[in-house]
Image (tube, one colour):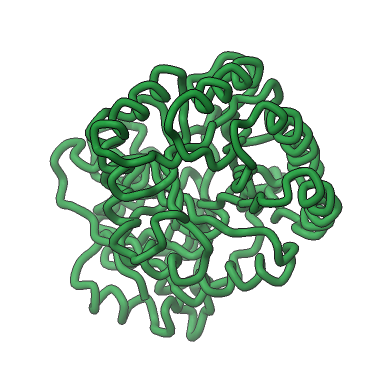
Length: 411
């Protein structure tokens, strides 16, 4: 008897009509014809709207939502989300340009990341956005550049707390980290900000990402609020912004279940009166990326060959890890697991089989699905990788082996 294969959480956000996946209100086959090529990424604006609406409904109304542009910096996606959220957070000069093009109030844009170069800092100061300081040296550079421009830079301190977000996909705090200023060093930095001509805004405390456990997020939020209230004692001005990061995850792999928002929201509601009392001018910000866009996107490739090697069937496609490194298992996974994958134009199919879906690259790492049950597919069929709206194309080595470029569409 064969072992029972673990299955993914049901992917139900995209309708299936006549056994064909629909996205943006049209069959996948029609969309592929409209795009004019494969491979491509497609993002569904309806799902972006619904995810923001869900958060607005579940979270306390006082919580502000910011979009972390690094999750998906496609200009059309960022433009659409800018109309729905309260602010944008960027991590490069390129992302800053995309954010400013949306028309978002610069006061609601922040810039995080270690190693910001003087030209990036100069652009940020000139634009009037908030710079999340990552080191004492960066603070001095910002002050010098601001003086040279005749402008008062807006700054916040990104804090590296002495705790981490438990069970997170990527830990961003606790212990030695290149991100932020260690919590124990932050009071001295705050005093130095007070000596300089800077517009202090508040704190950015981000401890981890891709978390599906409500209890872990609650613990991190508790510690984050406690830390912020302690640090505020040394702040050179009233705290006006408290960015508590994100960390909300989405289900990717067999065994994953969606995050339960209710207890997280209840805990935030519990903390807000205390924050209001002790930091009366502070706006509490949730900075979300993957949670906003991840489930709204698909990656679509075309089968170009079907071959059997020693009894196992391979579907060879025209896309792979050079466009979607994460789905290949080479972006953050320790043990490779399959993303949800279907044959998009025959989702269930009349026949099923165990196959591996691979790309065209000359490396055994170029795998999109390994020994997965799919509808029987042939040359010309369209393979769809779900949960592809975040950390897809721009997180991948697109120029590896010089294959044709992938395109992105918002529908």
